[in-house]
Length: 78
Image 1 (cartoon, rainbow, N blue to C red):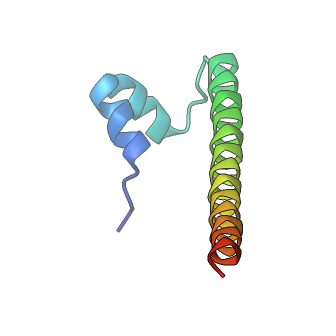
Image 2: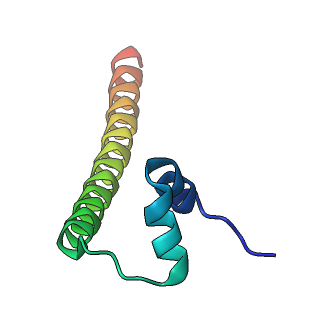
């Protein structure tokens, strides 16, 4: 039994003929556009990873600031 991928469903819904060509092993004529889309997804993935790392750094700095504030306030009370 063959697995049907989401991209195949998308291709079929967009154009049944394109899906058939893909199943027959014919190469796509829009290789430049496909390569451009792959590069776009690669860059987007990098930006998502960078934003996740920055968010983690922000949480760590916030936690550190709260610890320093609590130590400072505890020293003021005593």
